[in-house]
Amino acid sequence: MGIKNAAIHNYYPKKEDLVAALLEDSRKKLAENIAQIVESGGSAREQLQYYFDYALKEFDEGKSICPPGSVILDFEELPEKVKKQNLLLLDDILTWISGVLKAGLEQGEFSFSDSVEARAELVVEALMGARQLSSIKGRKTLVRSISLIKSDLGWKN
Image 1 (cartoon, rainbow, N blue to C red):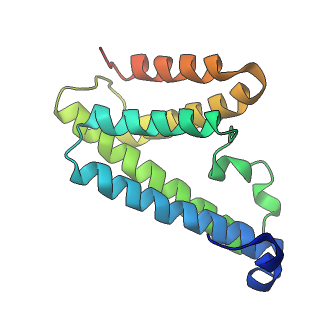
Image 2 (image 1 turned 135 degrees about the vertical axis):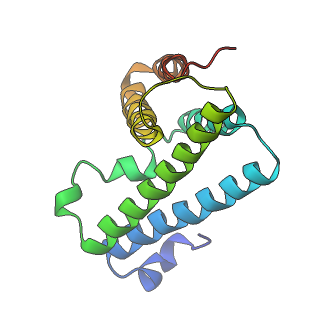
């Protein structure tokens, strides 16, 4: 976000303002990344692999918990502006993953029988949980979970 530590209180007098801004920034970055991968003509598998690779990259950088997951445990106690940004970010992720899964089903890249929306929720939930568990169990947990998600989607190499 380009702000030096000492100046952060000038921009965000309350912690809730900072957290909401960070979640909003995550939404903008997600939108940019989605636009870039869609523009490159990536297949559904390539787009979903990008999502998995991003999670692995963040884990390798010490960010084992994703932005929406970082505030989910105390969600009911969060200020409304933080809740709103977190829900918007989750909706953006789920909408994108649903679209990817729908395209993948239509193109024969995936094979599953439930709705793409339900399956998108399962993919996001599983990856969020795997990221948290991998913070104590190690990278192999995240890699194994990604492999299981792919298998569950009917993804054959």
